[in-house]
Length: 389
Ligand code: ADP
Image 1: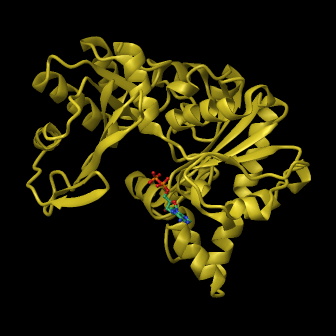
Image 2: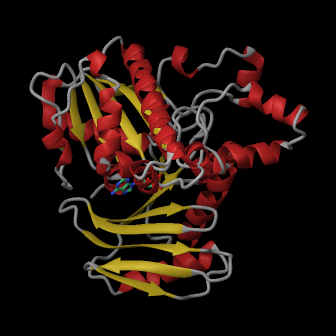
């Protein structure tokens, strides 16, 4: 089945057209700066990258352009999969778009206002413009929906939890689900308790026992948990009250600070990109070294937390930008987990490849893998399953 996967942000729209049987990617790209001056589409087809300077006043225009561009590709679109950041309390799994399910995406949007409204708009536009095509909602939270109550419940009053749906939702669920699937294909019965480590500019860990999410490090929003590119991860929640009352910062200021000006960027005082930070540390920048040390410290701590939530762990998988590419960061995290029996082979760790691979020694108590994630394929497979071939 040829599936168009759409990932809409507030000012961007990523797309990928792929076939679920052959897994061939026919074309992909990103509409950038939607509604902002200087908009363009970065399009890639047959390995050739193109930058198309077009006016993109809104998502409707962007979608129109995407369909026009894809008309020349010899793979008619048979279904559309939409990544939705927040499925809230409605989506334990992906779902076909109907008036009802689309309404749910809007209803839970206050939990992820920057994403869900744009995503809902784009779904609506696709339905309107191409009524003959089926659309599927693939929420990033769905994989975490059925984690045990003791994992998702916050210890705040029950009426507040119920009325405002305050709980742990997690994120990166589509990636964690793909990682489980791939690890399971490779390891078979040797893997029962996996900690999937999605380390990109956003980062989260997920404890997965026999395919089921047992806990994850992101919370009500993707701000919680690990130290990320520009997000602070877990801090004492009272930091917010303190900054508001004592420093006179508004809630919006604190929101911006914690989401956009914190994390590796803040600690390194240099960059949110791990490559720049590694380079800085190598040339003796103490702030960059601290950013890396803190990244290892928190990632290894939360790894142990995820293991504790399963009362054990047999497999660890690194994925996403940092997890797939950074030899140094993988080694740094693994070093801090030696006490748990993690032992990676430095030579295997150095190998660069697009294939999933084991990088631990045969004696390691925990098998460690690097698994390139493929959220688009996972979304497309859901579309195929729900809409049929
Ligand atoms: P997201 O999808 O959340 O934006 P990615 O998974 O693409 O993030 O990860 C982006 C991050 O991965 C970059 O900020 C960078 O820190 C890191 N990264 C990407 N490539 C490399 C590399 N070759 N070596 C080290 N780090 C890398």
